[in-house]
Length: 409
Image 1 (tube, one colour):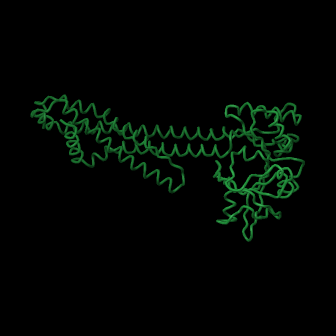
Image 2 (image 1 turned 90 degrees about the vertical axis):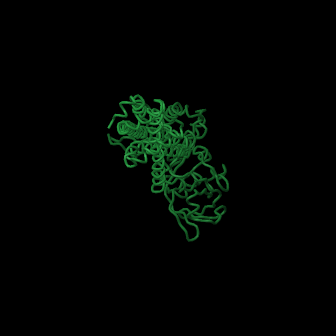
Image 3 (image 1 turned 135 degrees about the horizontal axis):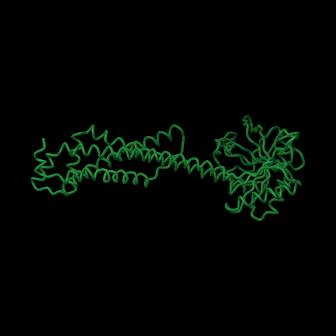
């Protein structure tokens, strides 16, 4: 029997019991749809995490001032020591593996242009900040060293702020007010997107540290050269743990900390993102286990229905053998039928998966990444299930005695 003839007979058998065939395929449909949907959403989530790692900066460590204790009561962060610009310079000078050490402070302020205003995050930065955050300038220029040193009234706009204040107009060279202080727009930052917590990184303006400290963020922060945090960019990812220990040692020496808890915290941002990625991988494994169970149940269902089909068609088998069909022809006929059943189930499962992923992407803006290789693998896997679970019923049909089969009622 040729393959085309086997396919024609298989299609006829499935069409004769259409509802039963659809119900038999249900396990395969659910399994394949679950696998493709899981992999598509998982890959999309992983790409989103990779983009978030990239947006944080190059191998970024964040140094926060820690909390102290007063008579056993834990006080607010920064009450025991204050991080300073001099600390940042010392870290970069004394630790060779640090590419950039950027002291920064931040606060909230109103920015006004003409009759338009916008409440945004104001950040005081120095020349290392954009390097540490791996942030680019999309228009204009970066802050110059002289401007940073003198606290000049110049400003960089985030993409969200530029859109809110200027729309389609040109922002470069325009004067805006931050609070009550006029600043000149000298650059527009490249878009970064959202943080891991959903915050908009582009809803910000940046200015020289001295200008932020003395002109915008208020006198309560105008204490020497104090800063809120120090962002540290490390040369290579595998050096981050070692550099974090060196940072702690340098700051202990500079602030004369003897024993006890460190009054500062060094946070590895890549570790935070990796923790989230690991949780996502565990979730995907659970989904894969559920999908595997569905495929196994579908395979068992196909074996069961094929055994029923062999019993129902015993007389047909006897007739085919009587007119010259070989045992291998009967085996091929029922095996092709099982594979066809699973392949059709896999095809329907793919359509269901596409509908699910596109629906999820449309309703929630969740990133999806459909991989053609995964779709092909799902179809191949479903066909393999057809072979594995269809072989025994097909072999049983092929081994029937023609005379006994003809006598079957």
